[in-house]
Amino acid sequence: MIEPRSSTSPDAVAQHYDRLDSFYRDIWGETVHHGLWVTGRETPAEAAAGLTRRVVDAVSPVGLRRPSVRGIQVCDVGCGYGAISHALAETGAEVTGLTLSEAQAEVARSRSVDGSPQFLVQDWLDNDFASASFDAVVAVESTTHMPERQRVFDELARVLKPGGRLVLCVWMASESPARWQVRHLLEPICREGRLAGLGSATENREWISRAGLVVEAEEDWSPQVARTWTVVARRVATRLVSDRRLRRFILDASEGDRVFALTVARLRLAFAVGAMRYGFFVARKQK
Image (cartoon, rainbow, N blue to C red):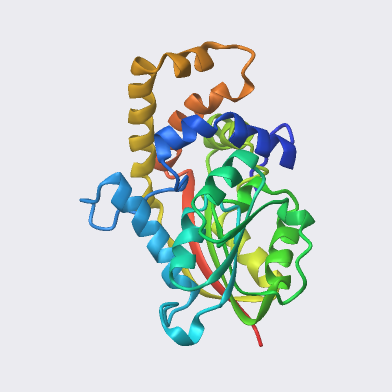
């Protein structure tokens, strides 16, 4: 696994997202995840919605819209602003979303109706859920922020009911990145993005299996999501020209999170040269 030279912490991750809250929402909207370009003709909003739809559909291959599955319990680990949680709730699922960021939770709750979905500010590795609490768990681009990666997956498996399903979208490193790719792209991306580390597809598959889950589907979405960083880079550049507040933030040497603008460029290049990968996994807990 590629790890940053300096370790991160849940508090640092929370501060990162709280400090960059308005910028992230300006640049990404409330999805805060990659877009999925299937035809190549999608708008960025359509691509983001497409990725959300694939995650929701994977939670239940039969489809959550059937009345017989209304009330299915789902946990959204690292829910961000709640876009996927709300999409799941619209199908009839009962959803609990977890985030480390108070700012994200506030936005997510503002969109809830009658307290559904429920959003908690909580560290996944310090959760108090009972074993076998959920029919499905989704983790979209969140596990890379967490240390003790095997323990992360052990917890994902623990809270699943027998027969329950894990749906995972994960930032990954390539299987054998070049030394310069690690030094100039992957390690800085981890450090600057408050990631605890980037595992390969093989490593993620092993963490899933060791947790007692059986991988039912695995796809590499790297070519379909890479355009996200071209879109984001263009938006950052545009806002630097038009937004005085963003310029002040980027130029303020006391702002440790201002480096996110450089990280965007690293991510765009990392996908272009194949050092960065994007994985989609569906796994089931055996009965």
